Length: 287
Image (tube, rainbow, N blue to C red; front, top):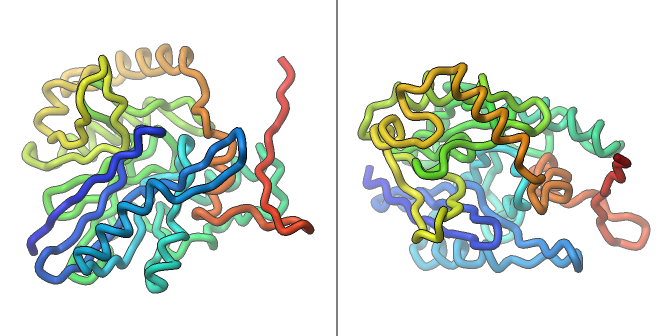
């Protein structure tokens, strides 16, 4: 298989979307696509996904799947919109999304929300291998940032979502409901760091510290040597202490509230109300 990977960067949310494809057969998957949302106006646009669709069409690719690494808290997923162009495409996520759905159904009091994962087309188990034409994709459960985080391994390329970023940015935060710094430590050290050192890692975000240029590809060897938060020698105790203290200083993601209400529904908007408009709910939390 001639695996090729094309990245797409959304500067508004620092998100990386990827298209992984077999150049010989043209089979493809899309990983973590973005749906633009202006919170002040409530306007949804497709600026971020348009280059992805354009690329798929120009290359005559055959996308089989949209792979979600988790229910994102910092951007809305455009996964369902790809069905407007490719009706056969399926949306996949970890089977543990049901835990996330239950949590946020309660937190947002979403009486209509499904908590059995039925909004998604495929619920994936840890270690499960799925096929997208000639592409073989292994699902690796990498919880910690959220309980339903997974990384996807295609040949020698790992798509890590928010488990870990470029070495100068470290790892994903673990302070969301049911997040766990201990579980993230185990996910990275027991799942990712046990892969061959040459394994390429494609990260879910790049926050470009100190204003450096965009970077999105690293390797297991580089992460074990240089990750500023979890290099290979760091103990679980030290990482958990660091991550807990660090997370206590972080503000909530700007699009946290709308993102979760859409993303636990697999990119479907909440049901339209009597006026034909969908709404997201904002809880008011007194001090």
